[in-house]
Image (cartoon, rainbow, N blue to C red; front, side, top):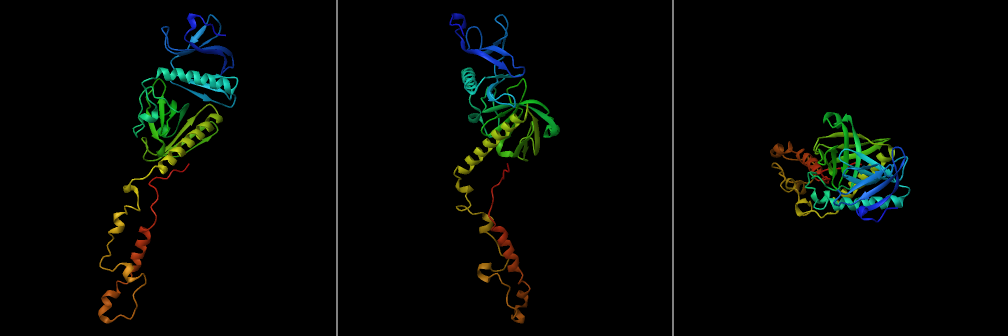
Length: 309
């Protein structure tokens, strides 16, 4: 149990947890910021030995093929996961660590509030989800020289790729520019269109195992659907409504010397015209051409961008 002496007043939570890689139990101590240092998570091999962690970039709850209740901590250059015994213990530690991180990031804003439409964020931004990924030399990973280890950070509108030892994204991908996403075994991929900041193509990323890849797929897909639903629910302005403001090329259609089909009909002119009207007889195919033009122009106008997931 934790002592209540003055020397441990900054301790918010402590207890035994297992490290993900080797499964060894260690005694973890979560400390708040104090005169002795910033807020931090420490673990002890024994009473005489301990290791202090660096300041966290972010924290998330995770699961993989071996462990269902992980607490994943990300620093600028390291990914560190600890294993809780059950869901309740996982939640307790996650809430405690998140609370300390939020205290340390006062003055920063959430990535959703800071999103300017181009996906730019500043250091210290709080993301909804973060995964550590290894971008493979395939597709855009090769052509844009993006291979290597990144943090894939998700906000409500944007995916960000953040290099290790950095808090500022080097690539920002708006979710509305993602055509599709999917996973295969331990790989996750996204396909972006021409409007993306890095052009069209696919980005392939490898993660720990298929469980993590599936979680990424489901989480990002759910966020994309929520964004699409929000965009469809939002009322459109008059300039976007085809009913209140028809397209000008339909209302100003010219008939090139012929009467419109509403007055002449869509059938060819009868053959019993006089010799003096022979000049007009040669123009009889014009209504047929006009009919095709009308049929083309009256086709319903679909949305400007179609997302296939």
